[in-house]
Length: 108
Image (cartoon, rainbow, N blue to C red; front, top):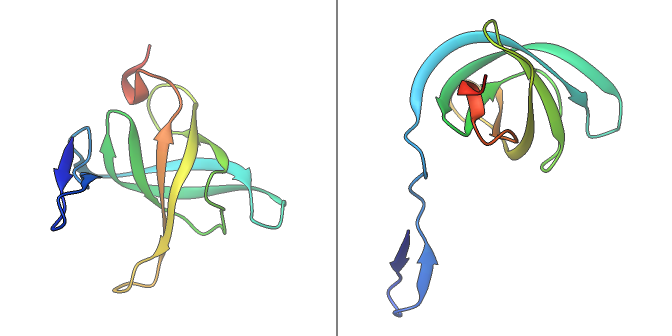
């Protein structure tokens, strides 16, 4: 979806492709920190869509990194980190991930 800016140029919409649903479930996240050290931490999913999620975790992960998610249901999922930020209200680190499997959370 594209929108026009005030100069008439076409810019990508900030609206997500898939609806995001607020959730609250624990999962394990495995990958490498910014410094290259392996990590395996408990995290919390706070929003999911068919193709991704927002997670709270205590690991310093870089944009573009590949991580492995293990939810309490289903199977392990590979994901690419496409956002990294610290929440201004609670000060906790969050990452946005894009699931690398086309079927996302719902793959069999």
